[in-house]
Length: 504
Ligand SMILES: NC(=O)C1=CN([C@@H]2O[C@H](COP(=O)(O)OP(=O)(O)OC[C@H]3O[C@@H](n4cnc5c(N)ncnc54)[C@H](O)[C@@H]3O)[C@@H](O)[C@H]2O)[C@@H](O)CC1
Ligand SMILES: [K+]
Image (cartoon, rainbow, N blue to C red; front, top):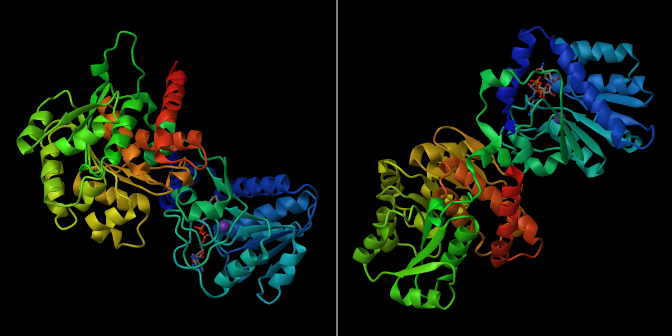
């Protein structure tokens, strides 16, 4: 399980280490050394390196890197944004050490920068890191603009300058780096877009901070990797029965819109639910009947018959929303699904149907005494249900999802290229295995089915949602470029097989 540290948490890790007896300058030396090592690895021969240093400790790391590269025989030049006399603490020490080692240090001059960039084979961006607290403008923004325009090979120290470590947002302008070297642990901004794209490859350097500090800091943001949820997932046992693996129920849309429910129902079965049933009106059921094999079908004429289906407690996890239609009927069905012990995935039209009265939905979710609820909005659906949270532009995606989870009581899967899963208890996971080919019709229906299956199998709700999103991503990798949603279904078998092998 990989934890991510916000800039505040990282600063706490630094401070705890320093209080524990490691001088800050030692951490900075290690950070700068890691940057210098990366520079050396990225150049096939000794050539000019240009270090751009800012006014804080990120600049300090740049001074150390320049000093070490100089000692290793690289021609190095350092340009400082701002006045040397304003450097403080460890950064001032690092500047003195670099000057004593003979590193040429100049004040950064915009007019001369293009010439300096032309001379360099490699640029080190040590302008701003974790301390970025406002948008870049004026000279700083100009510098970034000129570096990006030059398309020079660029190594970012900690973060590409201008990228927020907490949210991945670009504040003003941001460096487009070839590679980013960060310290101790990755930050959310390395995984969240647009930051992720601007980082290039990210490497994490050990700078002498002990993992013990994490026990005190208790980070609440994670990478959605296998380790996060796999301890809760078990392959079928030799003597197991299909009912041990739960029974997924997928509520279908009307006769002309039945495909979404079938995608979800087959996905649920493939993702390991013991059984999967589609519930449909008689006209929709006759369409399904021509298509379904392993998935079962139950037709219902009216609300009473729908209630009778729900009364079977073996149907322990339900998906409602895909192609369900927006309006009162869906609202009533959602309320019926939420009333009971089963787990519920609310997707698509189930979310949009409550755009006018989200509180009614949240009240039904909070009234639930057992069985988890997962909501899977994309940005548009999220903004309809949580307009106040969506309006807070400066809030990071994990924080928006956390707030929504707190407000609604559901686990929120906020979809996108960097899907975030968050729970009301404050945990949030960021996904990095999504394929761009997942942006295709029906992909969300498949996801809803997989999440439903994970809850049917008894995974706790947050872990079920994380597992579902991860498995969906892996399936897309296996299906490959050009995939359509149907292609995700057969390859789910391979993803599950690998999970099972991994535990053997
Ligand atoms: N002891 C430590 O805390 C360590 C810190 N490290 C480095 O230190 C960095 C954090 O250092 P700092 O907290 O000093 O922060 P930064 O060096 O990232 O930036 C802070 C400085 O930039 C200014 N600033 C912020 N946003 C600005 C903007 N938009 N326009 C103009 N000026 C702006 C601030 O006023 C401040 O002077 C990390 O990213 C990492 O590179 C590493 O050396 C490891 C040890
Ligand atoms: K930087």
